Image (cartoon, rainbow, N blue to C red; front, side, top):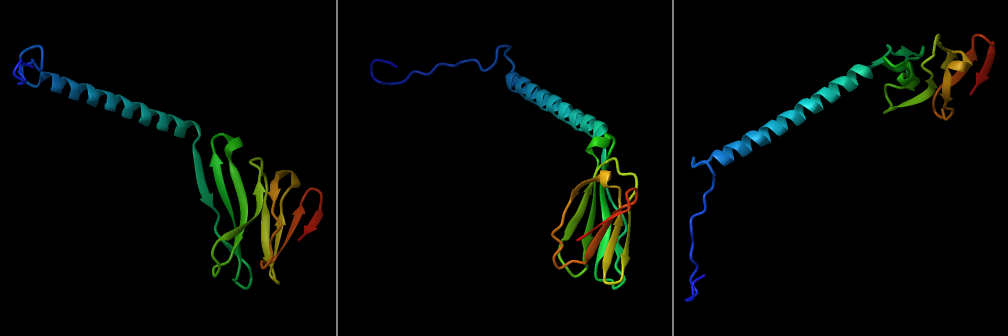
Length: 157
């Protein structure tokens, strides 16, 4: 500032090598390089995690009760790491929204048999050691009978 209150401006060089825009170009290249490295690292991490924990979701074909009003099926998430695999026996109805889970099954599941009877009634044969969780709130749904083929015990709901 000068004594009379005016501001005095002077030229300040934008870059050090005398070429206009070089600093801006260098900054753009640096930013794009950082973004590229972050993208490569992210994609690599996602690829590696999917390779190591490969899981595939699937559903069996629906098995309908004799009257056609209800169905059951197995929903499975099968993973390379067997401990992460999950299986569920579910029941649904074409005219109802949603499904109910009957059983959560362990990844060590070796056999599961189910069939419909008149009534309707669903009969399930599964070793008790393969059942991780059994749900029992089936109000408004068909009767479910679970048997352990090895122990020949029948449990009715």
